[in-house]
Length: 106
Image (cartoon, rainbow, N blue to C red; front, side):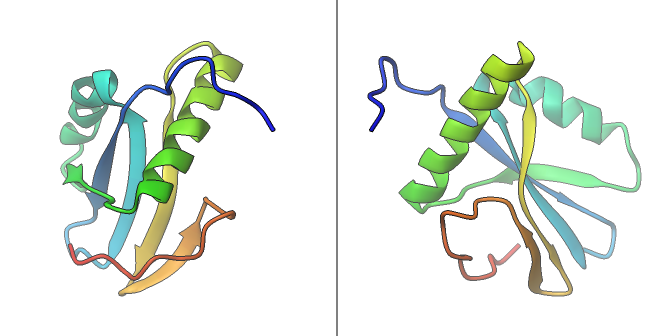
């Protein structure tokens, strides 16, 4: 069992959708990087990005750990894709320790 010496940085989640909203990607970044992250997607006319909240504390904690690990590994704050939905069904879930949550309303 590992003991944390410091709390992981807060993360912000983003919902990225295509114009039809049939495809949705749930991504996360260190909260301090949100403006830069969202600005990158705002430049693409084919994609829409908006803030999104996962309310399950386990999803938030697992994502914070993942982002913290990836930040140390790559030396910069990353963007991670938590999961994706197509036509109202999960097609990808990148937190394998956690069961799929219900499909969010978006």
